[in-house]
Image 1 (tube, rainbow, N blue to C red):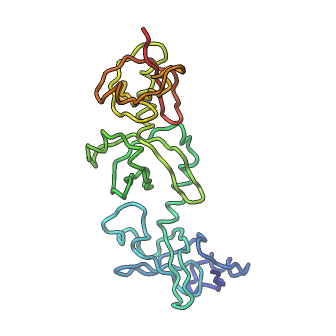
Image 2 (cartoon, rainbow, N blue to C red):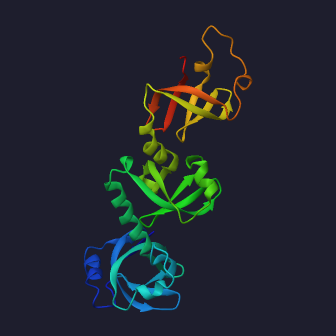
Image 3 (cartoon, rainbow, N blue to C red):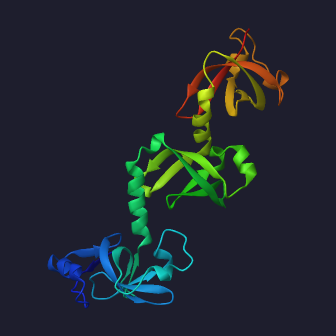
Length: 266
């Protein structure tokens, strides 16, 4: 939705004069300079150079959780505001400061080497199959399958937990993160190819056995259990939960956080 710029009724907003001079058409998601001209109990009035003031709801003032957001702004406060909604029927324009903060924080996140860093954050609200975490005032959703069971059982919202970024989607401001991968990257240096390790069986699947070695779940694939000339049998008849098995590391996938092991023949 577009809205024509007209000269602001407030003389101190020179930005509005510039916009009207070039016949700029304002639209949603535009970011404009503005000045606070009124503070009410549940919203703030902002002049961004239009022929009417804009409404800034309290929930759109700050990205950070603040008890009294209204105390952040005073008359004549100058800042940047994103056009959130233009309603011609009600002649009301809604703006947001929170969205501007989010955009800048997101752009800053994109400038760091996110694939190679480990962040530490606390668990927040639980949502369905995952949890929210907050890092640098940005909220991210992490699936429970990407969280070690140890952390899920703790249920401690005060504990800082390591996370790694798996993927960032700029167009939607979405980031996929994993705590399992962060823990893996920290501990995997203790697992090297060559030595023999003792691991405990944690899960038995039709395709193989998952074994815990030094805190990392490793996969003993079915192809490593039965030789090519042997008839494949039910793995459960060979192993049970808690069994301790001597193993050797045969490969490590650092990007996926996976370790493949083989039986130690010695």
